[in-house]
Image (cartoon, rainbow, N blue to C red; front, side, top):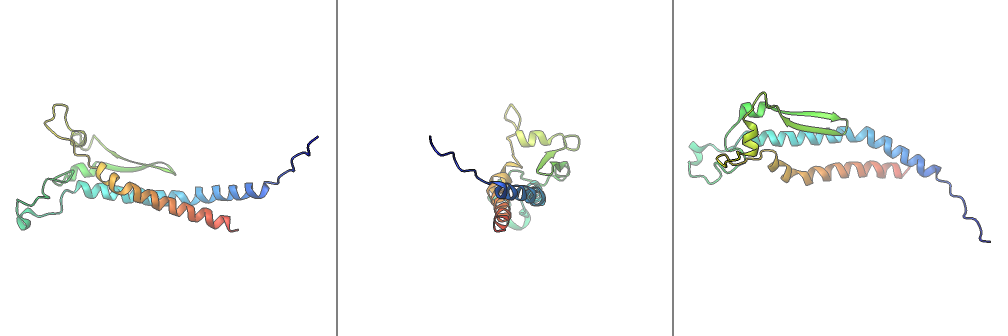
Length: 149
């Protein structure tokens, strides 16, 4: 008859796991909120149009009209809203009651007369990896600090 497996005491590991869970639940919301506000600012900047004055740079500047939104959309930008769904989930949405035409600016029209200008896609592609690394680094440092105790 084989020897029974020795019992393993996992209370210390469970205690650390509970500490990590509590630390992440308390530290993650401000980190996520900060990154959501950063991304919201980038989308708002994207909606402000090119930061080029055609009178100074000339109308033949290649950057004019090449941004996702080629001109300032003040009313459209005022319809953009950042709100939190929970302490870990944030959403950026366009209030179509304020600017109903922004749907067609973002998605374009079916007949192709208006091409889509994805004002949220450009900042997402540029900053999604940056935001993920920032959140991951902050949470790893929390876990490491608890693991040292």
